[in-house]
Image 1 (tube, rainbow, N blue to C red):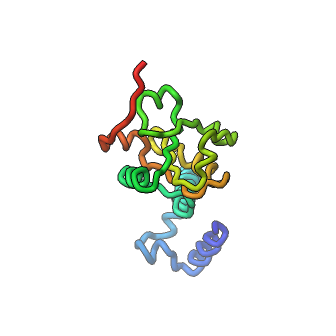
Image 2 (tube, rainbow, N blue to C red):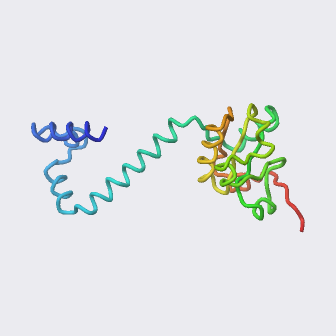
Image 3 (cartoon, rainbow, N blue to C red):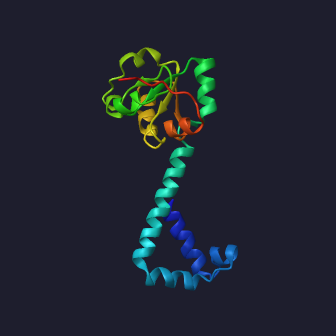
Length: 171
């Protein structure tokens, strides 16, 4: 893909019909000159852009669905979904979704699913603090035969912000 872009870029540059000039009215000579004068900045920009494109494609083509709080409530109430809370035990005891199972990411990577093994055909909702780290664990669950795996967008933080109930343990 990058190679195709480079060839396309070269062809447009040779014939002096630049894509940027055509679309945005930007003079390509100034654009190239800027990149040549600021090569480190250009490399950083291209790296960040590539990472952003990679993340967007990864999320878009992923088999894991990212769902919001209302969808979690529906799946729990109507489909008997199981919530897997990835936070450590202390955070879990400070408040978790009712009937959730506490597993840490390392346990999932080591295939230590506990009672979760019996629930491979159920809907599984993976939850972490803010929704950033749950996707990797959800992918491990998919690879290990779990059929319907979801990730709570925004994690427990979003659940709390929506003022939805949590279960607390008293010491």
